[in-house]
Every structure is written in C-alpha cells, then in structure tokens.
Image (cartoon, rainbow, N blue to C red):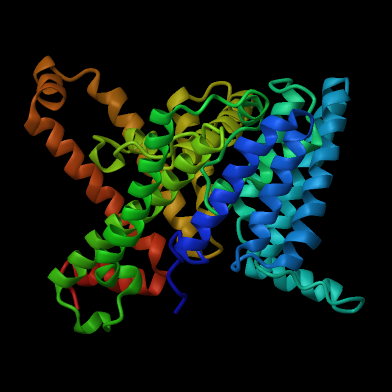
Length: 420
C-alpha cells in the first residue's frame, strides 16, 4: 500500500527555525541598511545559508542540481527579456518552461525516474534524489519565465532572482509568490513599525500553535495515520478519522503559511496570504479562492486561462461553459499530478475539476430559478449553512482520494457507507 502523503512538516526542530529566522532578520534589517549596494546579494546569500542549515534538505542536491537549474532558468529569462518576434519568442518560452518541468518530472515521478536511470546507467550514475521544495521552485520558475516573456516584469537581476527562488520561509511549501511583486519589496522594503513587528510575531505564534497543538491533537485520529485495519473499524470511526484529516491538513498547512507570512513581514517581504477560512465557503469555486490561494491563482493565470484560450481557438462553435468545464478538468488533473505521482492524485484533481465544472453549470442553471430560491440560499442562515455543509462533504470525498491509494480509498468509502 502506498504511504499517505507527508503533511507540511518542518524539519529541523522549531528552535532551529526560530534561530534561522533571527539570522535572516539580522541580515536583512540591520546589515542591509548599512550596505544598500550589496542588499540583494546579501539577501540571496542568507537564504542559501539558511537552506544549507536545514537538515531535511540534501546539500549536494541543493548545490549540484537546484542552483545550476536556477542559473539556467535565469539565463533563459534574460534571453526572453531581450528576444523579439512573437513566433521565435513563443518557441524560446516553450523550451524554457520545459527545463524546470522536465527536472521536476524526472526527480519526482517514479516511472520517469526509472526511465532516466535506465537511459543513463550505461554511462554514469545520475540517479536523481527527491528534491524537497522542487515542486514549488518549478512553478515559480514557470511564472518567472512567462512574466518576463510577456513584459509583466522588467529585465531580471540575478541577485533578486536568487533571493526570490531561495526565500526560505516559502521554499518548502509556498505560498507561491511572483517575481515582480517580490522584487518590488526587495528594492523598497516597507518600514517595520513596532505594531507591525508585533503583528508579524503574533502571526508566527498562531502558525506554530496551529501546527504543534491543533494539528497534533487531531493527527492520531486522521485517516492518513490510521493504523487499525479498515475491516475492524466501525463506520463512525472512519467518519471521525476523515473529519480529523480535513482539519489536520488545514491546520498544518495554514499554520505553515502563517509562519511564512509572519517571517516574511519581519524581513520586509509581504508574502501573499494563502488561506481565508476555506471550510466556511458555500461552493467549490469559493473554496478554491480561499484554499492555497497562491496555487489557485497560479493555476488560473498559467494553466486555466491559456488552456481556455487554446480551446476557444479550436472549438469556435462550442459553448463557453463546455470550454470552461474542459479547462477546469485539465487544469486540476495536472494539479493533482503536481501533488504526487499516484493515480489517486490524478483522480483527485479530475474530481476537483469536475466539481468546479458542475458548480459553474449549476450557477448558470439557477439564474432561471425563482427569486425565492436565491433569497433562501443567499440571505438566510439556513440556506448558507446548507451550502457550506454540502461543499464541505464534497471536499471530504476528495480527501479520501488525496490521502489513500485506490485500493484503500475503495475500502474507506465502503466502510463509510456501512458496506463490508
């Protein structure tokens, strides 16, 4: 049985991370004000030093694979910034995007890694090791290349680019920032008042509380760490374990994001918000605008919109709703594979894409419903609560796929409905 996906754990220990944050704070807030000319380089070097300190990150992989990859992406970005001619620019952009995505596929996905080893074993042992944080690095690299190519950001500088890619609070699990926004903060960091500093510190404390207290409290009951044989578990126990996982992944991931946001503000980087009470939303579209927000925006800007435009060019007579639905399914199926290499992740993504498509179709259909329906659903507590409960349980069904292989997921569903 394939093991459940690892939640957003932080290794090393908490006090080490606090110490790393303090070092980063010292460099960025004190030293950089004395040497503004060296600001970006000192900032980038500090990020690298902190990452080399994190025990979970393989030093050889970071220095031998990640840094060369980042340098190659930066050089391709420089070429894109100076390239003229739309056809040639599109070809160069396609080749540039293929580089980080190819490295991600080869290092993350077992079948691609096996093929890679087979092709290279005759010459040299190039077996790739798992690269922590590479999924996020690849998406940041893609957004950087696309934004430079489209002119959304000015010609990049290596120092600020490395600081952006290696920024340690967001390196492991986001939020996914954009280079142009990050660079503006780096060039003109907002002043840190006592009030803002206290708010940032409180945000870090809240994040640690979510991860170490709230997430830890429900972790033993969550389906991802369920150790009892499913055949021996009662229906009630399975439902409890599923609810526990839903809050485990939320408190753990949102806690990590709170720490990243708070730490970023201390060092002058306004890290984007990543969660806004997602389980209180009334439909799946609202949920994805409140859950892992920076990933949702990345998928919208760099996958959903380009896919939709390409489909419109090919399917000129197809209704817009069909184009949007197809784009949703393609986008989230690929997003599922980004999360992991199992078939369950692909199906989870497709399930989310179908849910978004159904939500959009239902929204179009209900426009013709009588006013009483809209008053009940949008203006009464009962209507809003009903929509929230239905949405939450739709998400629960998705978490079954997300945290279990297909065989185990089937047994979980059977147990949840009392079928043995």
